[in-house]
Image (cartoon, rainbow over all chains, first blue to last red):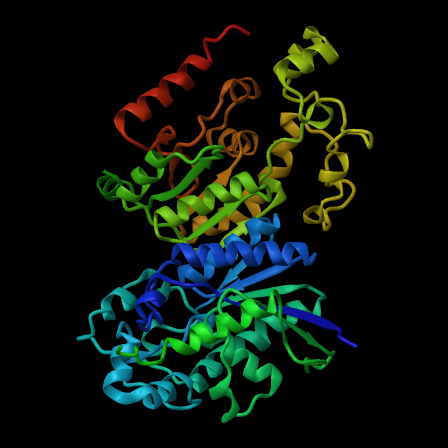
Length: 258
Length: 241
């Protein structure tokens, strides 16, 4: 018997998704398709009758914009939205801004897959010489976090993501859920994966193979000890979901030369 | 321009009001972005037109990450049984004389919104008002009532933030903002009833450490837009009652 329900969603396509570049902490906006995905999700959730009480997002605009689009489609703009860096996308360090296909060509599909999908492999850290360093660390939002700017990550493995996400989940999100609130988390590919790994008890080995489709709401049902009562459900047209999963997986692959 | 002002006035606290927009005004937000306004916290009502106005603004000035607090206390005035009626319908239903009384009165509320009203269920039973007590949820409001429920929020929630030096952006409605303006400027009941804040133009207040305005409200925008807004406000006092 499920005591609690939580909705988790990975935002839709960003401008760099099309270019296959690691976006990470660069504050790219949703592409037109990403906007459409979010709206479609909102309609889906509305049709399903979900009545949200609280929405959590990261500090990145694409996550926030997705939440706004969902709320608008659901006619629930009045629902409070809480933002935290702890839900930010995984920090890809020196790999930020690099094209995935080029990397796959240089390092091979497997290495790229490892960097993207391994649990505790940390990419090389970003440093001042990186073209996106100042854009990220001079941004005022990172002076408003619950850790000092100096202590914010310079690179992360998926394990690192969970380490900075879990206290937020336990200390901020769970208490709200326990009060009976229906929470939606508008997250990113890896922050969602980290959270799901934690909730579903997915092993370090298996998480490598878990791919979350974009723009697909995930419903998690939990008992009073916050253990899942059933496997997570991807909501929506199942064929479309499988296609979306494949799309994400293909991004890491080398383009076939004909 | 603002940098010079802050140099002269120490300490200077700033609060920005945005009257709700029904239509996205591109010029307005371009002006705000151009001036490089930075905020620390935002407040709005629970009505989508104010929330969407705020979202459009935050998107334009690239500060979507700012914390946003929504409250019913910044909602537009509750017009009770008059909700949804236009001027001629109101006059036809209640008579010109009664309409004049309501328009000129600070504390006479319109008729209540009763269960048979088209909007009764949509509004009174809306989930967003689920936490309000029976006393808090209005069935109608005079301007006095609106101000009476808006000001506590200003005093209890917004003022402490301003005193901490936070730069505040408020996206709200004509009458809830009137409450704050009346309070800030110490305006009389007659004076506030005559003031119609222009829509779709940011209104800037610079406050001293006692939260008294150091100058009259400023409209932000290009010269033409600002001039028109100021003229419209000035003309209100001269309009036939």
